[in-house]
Amino acid sequence: MASNFTHAIVRRPARSVIDGITTSPELGRPEYGRALAQHDAYVGALQEAGLEVTVLPALEAYPDSVFVEDTAVVTPKGAIIDLPATASRHDEAALMEPTLREFFADDQIRRIEAPGTLEGGDVMMVDDHYYVGRSKRTNDEGFRQFASHLAAWGMTAEQVPVEHILHLKTGGTYVEDGNLLVSGEFRTARAYRRGQFAQVFEVPDEEAYGADCVRINDKVIMAAGYPVVQAQLEAWGRRYGYDVITVEMSEFRKIDGSITCLSLRF
Ligand code: CIR
Image 1 (cartoon, rainbow, N blue to C red):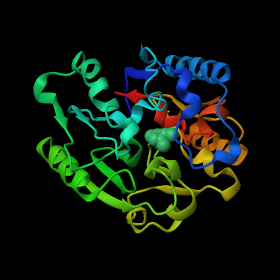
Image 2: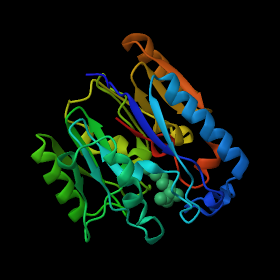
Image 3: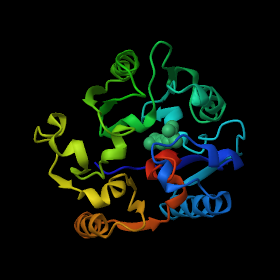
Image 4: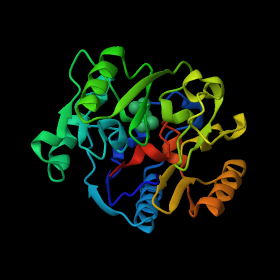
């Protein structure tokens, strides 16, 4: 079943984005003007995919607040407000809640509460089943609460260990039609080997950053500069009826942000 999204929520990068958390300081700090331009292009790609995009103002006190995906998981039945694990990002979810309330009724909003932590980057939706990374950012209690919220809405979840990267989706994304991209440690993840995927494409190490893409209606948005991933997506796109849009992501990559991180989609 292909996605049928109508809306996205994004947040403008703050000037403080140059101080975003990173595991790759050798890439240098983001350049603010370039990050803004890349963000504009990303919003343009979401619109090209047919979405109405709510663009929230920058939050200077939160360097990583451009990565709105970590503040909530929006399902077809309702939204689960996350609890980001790092102190500097902790309050970002509460700051997103009023915007989600514009789209969802009270009984469609649930919350991850301490000591649970959960970040949306760790959550990969495959129809009504959710794979949840057990990472440094998402703990067992966060998963337990998340799975119980989903169960109340008739959906299921399972954990996937994340050892070497930030979030589950940093290492691979589901692009619908049974097709999954995986990189690094997820090439051998047991959770992905049960026959529920028609095709699993193993992204070569030198293109690992390209493994995080997003399918939106009849488009897939991916980072520019990953030709092997792009060729695979274009081949799938010809077969399943979608086009690939590439956007420059260099400035967000410097602080561990990838394609899915920059939006909430529903
Ligand atoms: C962080 O470390 O939290 C940010 N610098 C990057 C967050 C990326 N978000 C995502 O993968 N969903």
